[in-house]
Length: 103
Image (cartoon, rainbow, N blue to C red; front, side):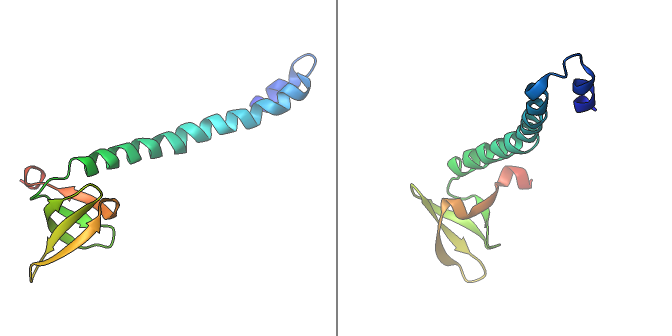
């Protein structure tokens, strides 16, 4: 509808009218897809920065465990039922479940 309105204007707006629609498309795409993804990424980075010993976490592979040690770029988890210790990079953590959110 916007493109039809531009064509009906006196002079037709020439090549500018053909350029407005793709620009409008990219602006809408930016606000519908890119901005929410950036917010989600920032929230995930904050979550990884706040991991502490004792937190219950789930990895991207679906392994659930309790954080024993936090290093710069990795965490050591204790996994049940045998209490096996596994080391994961922080980026493999998908979710953190603290005692406060479980209560």
